[in-house]
Length: 220
Image (cartoon, rainbow, N blue to C red; front, side, top):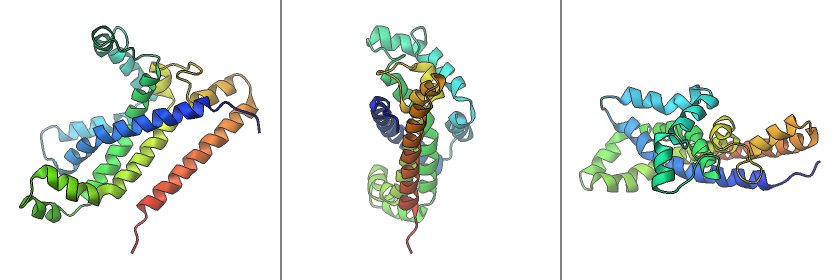
């Protein structure tokens, strides 16, 4: 097997890990709100959540470029106000992977929350405030589905390509993830390198799917 650089793999692991943490922090309250809340605009929010699964990644990347680019409203605030350069950095790749992975985590966590018997939570609310019930009853009961969602989010973040290419670029040693490195190898007519990295990526995805199956297996 051809020798390959581990830099794209290590960068992909770093980006996917950070994106998964971001998906957990951002997605958990949204998933709970969709599972338990009844409010005006709920259908709109649920539609927005799945948009990254439907629109082409390049379209999502283009919208993000307009938003966080140097001339974009958020990008200008970050660069001029906070001195944070985002575009064409590994931080932009984390943002891209988070956007791509977020829907998978939210839908899995939403299903986990919806599977909890409301009577258990209602009983807890008679003695404890909502936040305590969430931390001591809801989250422990939903952990299996949330973990499966987190693993799927990690896998999606590992394979993210289109959004990353649009806002982070393909800079070797800086923003070149494993997916982008495979693309480069194919474009450079280096089949051995492409095969080696593809096998590595496939093995990682299969391992993740096995973990999901084990974590979500119901024991009787």
